[in-house]
Length: 72
Image 1 (cartoon, rainbow, N blue to C red):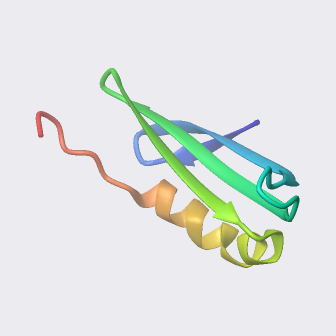
Image 2: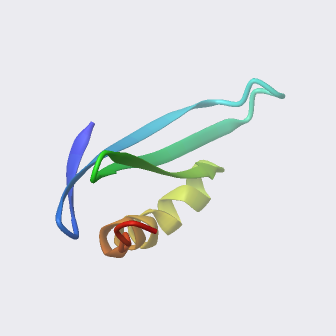
């Protein structure tokens, strides 16, 4: 687990690799949890390890720039 700078604070970032229970193919998940005003926001990127590696930076940038409306 790592901490990730996001707008207005920090998020928890995880990165796991394993095998799919359906068929045993390699799989990787990158996830982030952002807490704001008593709410938790969960983001995940799941799939083929090579695809996830290619898209990881874009995923992290998306999480870092997400904005949350109060009272919405």
